[in-house]
Amino acid sequence: MNKTLIFCLSLIFSYFSQSVYADGNRYQIEILVFSQNLPTSEVFDQTESKIQWPTALTELSAYQQTDITSLKDGASVLLKDPAYQSIARFAWVQSTGPGNAILPVHIQSTDGVLDGFIQLRNTQPFQLTLDLEQKSSSVNSSGRRYLYRVNEKRNINLNEIHYFDHPKVGVIVRVSGA
Image (tube, rainbow, N blue to C red; front, top):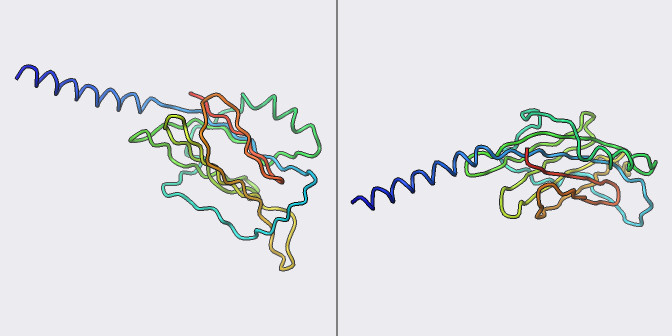
């Protein structure tokens, strides 16, 4: 009976230790989105959103906003080239929720040109899903604006800079422990 009690207590302690540890996981997520005005032979004809919106989407304003620190120098060098124009910059701190889940975050520029979401999954390695659309200034024959979509899911490591590419829009993301 004594061994059973010790076993049960160690299971309970292990459970609560994991819960406390999970609640302490905080991540700083930094994003720079920019347009690329580079020559391309590709034809873009998307005019309707194709984003597959996740459930439990959280607005970015729900999180503590921070300064973009690690992307600042690279962004200033990149944006000196007239072929690149900044669309939006975001940085926030986000914690894991129950079961180490990290809720998807709605990303939207103030001018409505950019819309989409980003989601980080706390797995080993981490998995980042990015689905963003940029409204173009170009329109089709019906007067509908073209959309340029960056839709990618990839494994990432913390503290690395990741580049998501489309011929007309680029996204740089860095996730670090906070």
